[in-house]
Length: 130
Image (cartoon, rainbow, N blue to C red; front, top):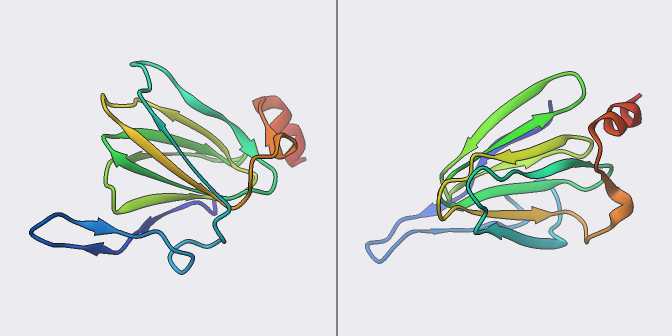
C-alpha cells in the first residue's frame, strides 16, 4: 500500500507548539483543505475512494481511526498527534471511525471537489480496480 504516516515539523516553544503543512513535506500540491468536527459518537465518515486525488489527513485535536483498503490489503491507523498525518494515495478506499469527543480531522487534498473523482460504493471500487 502506498499510504504512509508522515511526521510534520514540530517547532516547540514555551508559548505553544507549531506544525506546518507545506508542499515540501507532503507528496502533492495542495488544492483544497477542509476539516471535520462535532462528529457524533459512533458516526463514521469517509466511505469512499478517489480515482485521482491524494489526501493528507491529520488529527488536529482528539483521535480517530482511518481504515484504508487498496483492494488487496486493509490497514488501520490511529491518528492522535497534530504533528503527524496520514498520506492516502489515489485509488485507496478510506473510512474514518471511532472519533473521540472534540476530535478535529483536517484533510489536505491534491484536487478541488469533483464528484466524478469519487467512488462511493465499495463493490464499485473493487470493480474499478480490475
